[in-house]
Amino acid sequence: MSTVGRINSEYLYGLARDKSVAGRMALAETISDLFLQRGCTLTERERTLMFSILRQMIHDAEMSVRRVVSAQLAERDDAPRDLVQRLANDEIEVAYPILTKSTVLHDTDLIEVIQQRTLEHQMAIAIRQSVSEAVSGALVQTGNENVIGTLLENSNARISDATMEYLVDEAKRVDTFQEPILRRHDLDPRLAKRMFLWVSAALRQYILENSGLSQTDTDDLLEKAALEEIDAVASPDRPKRKAEDLVAELDTQGKVTPDLLVQTLSEGEVGLFMAMFRQFTGLRELLVMRLVFEPGGEGLAIACKAVGIDSEDFSSIFALSRKARPGSDTTLKRNSRKILDFYDRITEDAAKEVVRRWRRDMDYLAAIRELEVG
Image 1 (cartoon, rainbow, N blue to C red):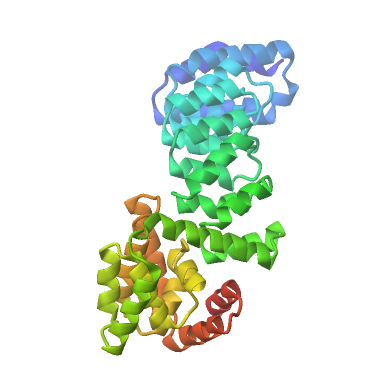
Image 2: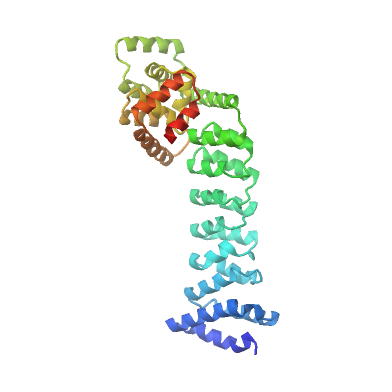
């Protein structure tokens, strides 16, 4: 006697209508039994009949039963697409196994779920073993940072060149995208070099180790980044020589103080601030430009700690120096918390040693890396 013959449609329908705990458990166990223990013995006719029964009963079945059906169908490549589609659009508790595992769904099915269903549905699709370029594009179009971050962490997801270029540009604003983008095997080296201009010192080191950039390339890129930043925010009407002369005069009077640094930067006098900061630290002009405007702020933190600028003044300098940079207030607050933690962890003696190395023209990134390791 066949499996479906013994467990006929009337029996399954009866269980589906039974709302008791015992009835729900019996239905779930019966479905599991059909799929797992005896599914391989079903004929094509019996399998067709079984799926037909499931289509009809799924309308009235409670979530606990739908979850069992979804978990079983997610593993089968012979499941009817219409039934799988219905489960994929169910509540996330039901849809999750289908969305993460089912090979029956087409790209159009997945894109429809992305566009019509919840954040949880989108997250489930982002972790699938196989994600096409079209589906990746639809996930990115949601604009949700958590969904996009999950997609970027999925090394099996295929992301088109156009979408990746868009995400690289977005990573300038959303710093949580930066590391997963850089760690993707399919990232075009051209895009990695573009990111070099504005990621943190730690991620710059990662790019150096994985992109084939030479030290000369590094210096050229960092100089370009610093010059672009200062051109964007500096006051064009203050001659450089005049700023240096003013700082020299203020220094002889003992008036170059952390408070004056903060006040000068808050008034937008970037050129004057840079001249005072060079006087404070004894560092070369280009290096000061680099550490003041790099995104992560590690170099700025080290220099400030080395010359005795306290945490409150450093926090103000960091925030003001990044005011003109692209990014949301949320990103700035997140970065501020991160860099203040770094500032508090480093000692003044360690910071002074790094600054001494910088004065001797030692490698900028290497000094930061060794301090972080230490």
